[in-house]
Amino acid sequence: MTLMTTQTAKRLQGKTALVTASSRGIGRAVALRLAADGADVAVTYQSNAAAAQEVVDAVVAAGGKAIALQADFAKKDEIENLYKEVLNAFGSLDIVVNNAGIAGNGNIADVDDETFERAVDVNFKGTFYSLRQAATHVSDGGRIINISTGYTHSTFAGTGVYTATKAAVEQLGLALAREVGGRGVTVNSVLPGLIRTDQTAPIADQYDTFAQMMPLGRIGEPEDIAGVVAFLASDDASYITGQYLAAAGGLVS
Image 1 (tube, rainbow, N blue to C red):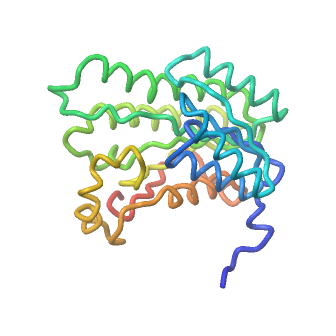
Image 2 (cartoon, rainbow, N blue to C red):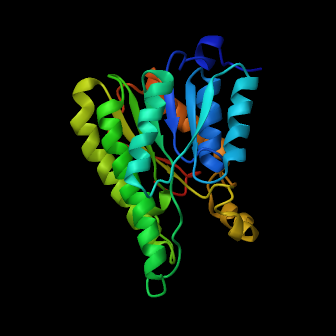
């Protein structure tokens, strides 16, 4: 038996959402969940147009509205153009989920310049450029949600570059929350733990080991994060801003 009412399921009806890097993984789950809750969704991708179109097709098949847009989140001009395309397609923008990011893993002594710079360009600079656009273009009462990582609070060896760029994103969000709060816009960061995605597939053989460390006894699924994002995007979270919300199975406090 489910307690979800039709009103709850469609609590984002009439809203428009931009979810970056949403052709797979967490971004895909977020796009599908926001659409299920009633939002029109812009699905973005860097290179896999077919995967993005599959997400759009799933939304449309369920009775929703979605479009697929390409952008490289290391390039300012493409991010700026992305916002223009979203506004041209939907007329307004109510929800932005900054999910685009790359791992950039490796011990600090071993990370090469190219890996470091790409992580900074995508995770930090790309999110900054997106936030700068969102600060101007998100409607009054809108929602801006950054996907960070629980590793900013519980760092492991080999994750230093990744966590440093994500920690910078959290600080940008904290400042922006104070800058746009007067318009009723909220800005929050979601901190996932270990989530079963393509990005973590290289350590799939360690999933069971990590699961034993979790108070909930399992690693996360993309849908776990999508549910948290959907809550923050809704009116139920209208008085929550400038927060870091860990969704890490209890491993991160």
